[in-house]
Length: 407
Image 1 (cartoon, rainbow, N blue to C red):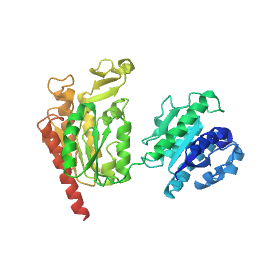
Image 2: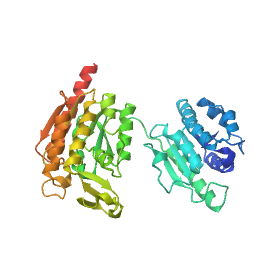
Image 3: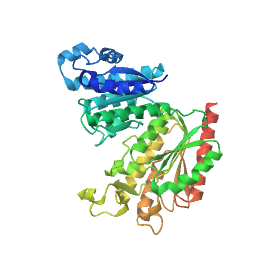
Image 4: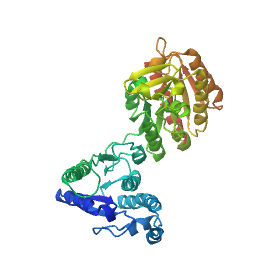
């Protein structure tokens, strides 16, 4: 019988978590109540005490309580939660985890859940679910359900929400998928403006015996891809959509942070890299574009997304940035250049067609790459079938070389 961890601040929200635990048990599952409270005695008896949780991270809870610093206590529990959940997961004592909370409870529980592997059922009912949840989710598959009312007692609204949450986590735990897939994994980056390339590459890679994981290069997607590469699950990377670097450099909304295009180089994963969609910086609806950019060239991708064309000077800097990241590679890597357009809208006749900017990008990239890194020019747009085919050939060759070196 599967066991679901019910983690929360049981000193302040014990009855609410016990309600959820009872609902879970009524559906045929076992529960493990974990207390991550910091300010006093729990209102219900936990299976794992807050002292045990704190000890997992080497924290003396009593001393911390004596200082009466709530912020310090929350930070300490947020550091301890991953340790206890990972321990329970590795011991196969839990098959899912659920929590209820406000900002502090959500911070503690989500910290623990982010340590668990992708695919492990994780759900938080939170008062923070209607705002920016990126700090809580990170790159993991945590489901956040709006609490609607505060997690403060049981009433006609909270009972419904909590009961539905209990049903949801039970459904997630019961929906086990066979892990029979054994094909090696390739990570690929894609944007709406590079969809044609990836769609053409996928069947070619599948024919070669690989499974392809596609990540939307929207900031979160890029960070998730980098995280999976670092986890050791990926054997090759088709990173043809490096657009998040433009948002990082210029100040767009879809940056993946300064470490984008770093994991494969650092971890020795063979790859193919292209300057896909470095012609654009992403903003939200048109009214959200910062004032300093008002004199720039824009394209309305859809009502919620406004694209701004990168300038030749920005493209020069982006070429240098991308090359410096590629230069750190310790595995075979090829840089692919689609000479006729790095996105749908930068090809001839498109609104972002700018040969001078593309030339600045390509020259900077080529001039900054260290000797020994292969660069391939393809006289086609990034979405042309011949460019996708060339990328696949290079990636398969790099994987083959990497395997021969290891063996």
